[in-house]
Length: 158
Image (cartoon, rainbow, N blue to C red; front, side, top):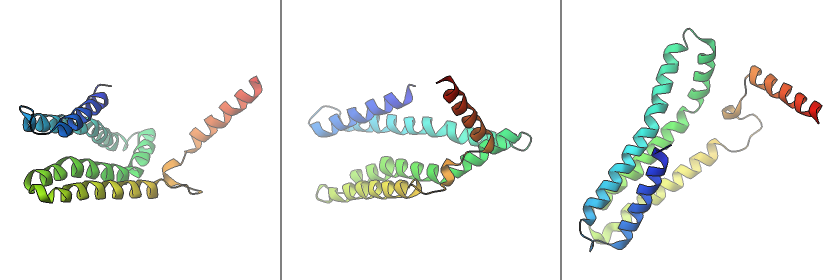
């Protein structure tokens, strides 16, 4: 509950500091602090996901429900890889490009950031495009039966 608002606040502060320009005292330091907070927040979000997948792998050998949950999470492995790659590329590689390139070649870092965003959105739209049988939205039989029972009870009450 704290990480995502902190990340939003850090990104907003980074934009404000970035737009004010280097005439503010410790401008470079504040840019680096907000970048560090952003990276820490990204890691704080990604770490529990990776930890839960690892935990499910260990318990799935003995527990059938954990095995089903692990199967669902492994469907999202490509999603996690794309998101993690996008986050680290836009946070670390783009920042490095901004730092090492001369001012007149600043457009290269902007191109890299915008190109990564475009590629990320295209991949996300492709992965989650509407299809008749999407593997990401498969319900197991127990969940489907429970949903049908709940729907019947709701219709009966009306």
